Amino acid sequence: MREIQFREALREALQEEMRLDENIYLMGEEVAEYDGAYKVSQGMLAEFGAKRVIDTPISELGFAGISVGAAMNGLRPIVEFMTFNFALVGIDQIINNAAKMYQMSGGQINIPIVFRGPTASAGQLAATHSQAFDNWFANCPGLKVVVPSNPADAKGLLKTSIRDNDPVIFMESEQMYGDKGPVPEEEYLIPLGLAKVIREGTDVTMVTFGKITKVAINAVAELEKEGISVELIDLRTVRPIDYDTVIQSVKKTNRLVIVEESWPLGNISTEVAFKVQREAFDYLDAPVIRINTADTPSAYSPTLLAEFLPNAERIVKAVKKVMYRD
Image (cartoon, helix red, strand yellow):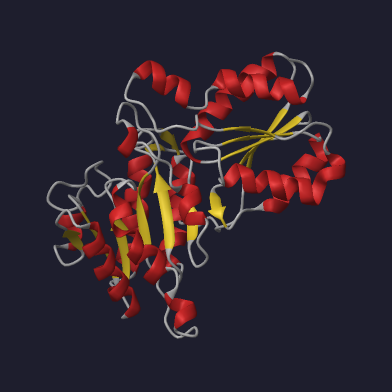
């Protein structure tokens, strides 16, 4: 199977869906003339023209609102934010219009729109450009939230998101755009709300999603060298969450570690931990452990940034702790 970059997998998904449906368009800062801030939309202006690949001013509230209105009137917009940190300027359109319109119209108006772009840390970008918003948007009913961890999932999930008749938040990572991985050449879709068991195991269940999955994979490999078998689950979507896959795994391993790049309070790992203790409490042989970022804004200093983020060492220590081997 061929291997392509994460950005190329996203581009293929965009191109394939835009060739199928002329009502789909892409809008955002630098998506057209500059071929995309991260080159996801490279060559798309030449193929689809300026009416379907549209450069915008630095005005997230404006172009998010334009696209919500377009979706209400039969188009299927894809809105690229250069970073979801900038989406805070347009969050009113996402939360109060896109997410609520179907209910407020009594089911008469769908909003088939995808808001996509990078989230969370991306190196030395400091406090205001390093925030993870996955759980923020997942908190809002009316939205679906997708956080892929590899090129193949990115393509299949983005194609499904574009075809969905509800608003989808599609969260990527600046640090993943150059990642390479196997991607099928044939047409395929990946359903939203279906987790993926990356590796089967018997000793501990580990749940994660998005960019931090790469760190978890490395930690699991280290644990395997010590004879510890970890079942690693990639949620892929955090609204809806595939609770069943997680719970069935916990019933097998009797232990759970959750790894998430987000602040500790009120996040996806909190929700998963609650659900597991409610549905599988009697199967747990140890308290659930969550690995999150430090409860502070991200720093610019590389040394402080390394302390801020989840890492393989912390994950290995957590797994050993739930096995009472620390």
